[in-house]
Length: 284
Image (cartoon, rainbow, N blue to C red; front, side, top):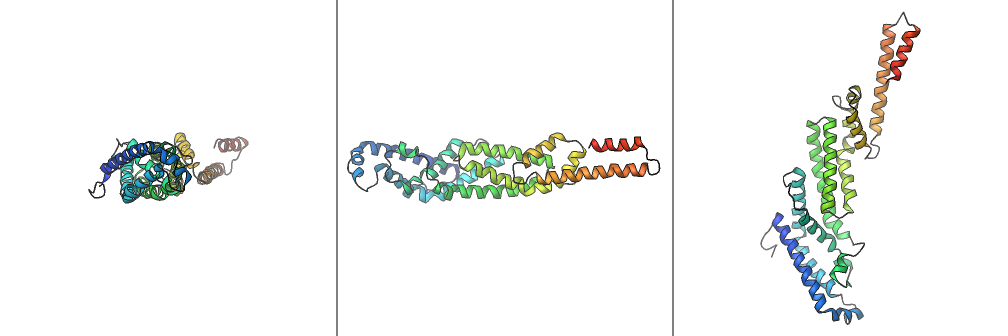
């Protein structure tokens, strides 16, 4: 009926989640009413249990026909939430729909589920279907989204402003994942976000002429330098550009002090002058 009526977006998710809720009730009572079949005939044969048959029915007649539309609706709503358009996103609804993806993974492997409660509490749950049908697309969509956003932000933001924005994004993504996704997706999500938003742009941010690390050091922007350090250490070899830039800055400052001293005291170098130069070098 959902496919036939062309329901889309949030309405599709609500109806999809409601159908799953109703199906769980039906499956539970079917197993309760015919428990004697599970305990007798089914237990002594290779026939799947009533709970397994019930889950498989939802998988075949509801999940398979709708999985693409449901996935697209979920990804669309998440992107809108990232844009701040759907600020009041129904996290419970999104989580319920996402949960169905990895619950359906049971249908591919388990045929002797004793009850729905036992099925939903199985550990570890087979995540193969969830990863294949949702997580892979979600992470790919995330990469595409932040590839575009990072290019826009880099054109308008200074390095510190960009890094503060990224810090906020990572916090929001972590919170969104905890509310909506399976726990196994969180580290993968943070990894792709760090790669797209920090790792790919770390050299540009460090060496930016107007707001890069040399500018921050010269103007003693200690909080901004701390933020850059905190963000860059999250990615592999992230601190290497900072270390190289810091080394070059110190060398340039030291050479400038020595050059200025040699120019000023070319013919009148004294012990005091040399000590003053050394003190300035040590203050770097």
